[in-house]
Amino acid sequence: MLLKAILYRRNFIPEMVDLYCSGKFPIDKIVKFYQSEEINEAIKDSVNGSMIKPIIVFDEEYK
Image 1: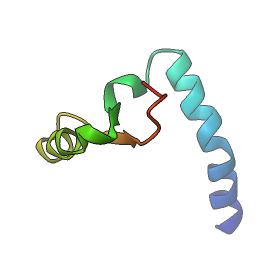
Image 2: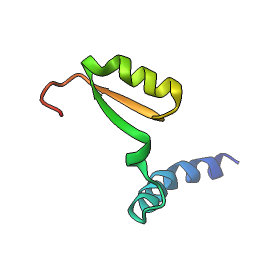
Image 3: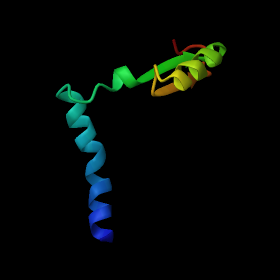
Image 4: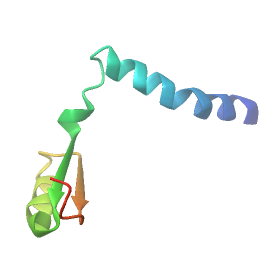
């Protein structure tokens, strides 16, 4: 059982990348970057389900 779990973790990321590259895993539709001043919007979007993974960016150069 442990070996199966180890192999599953080892293959998980490459499989996700393959799905993304083939257009079957639209990560750009479930992840959104918000500037630090948009934190309230990020929380609202997360709570209402319009965004699955809001990411807060504190680096002002990253836009």
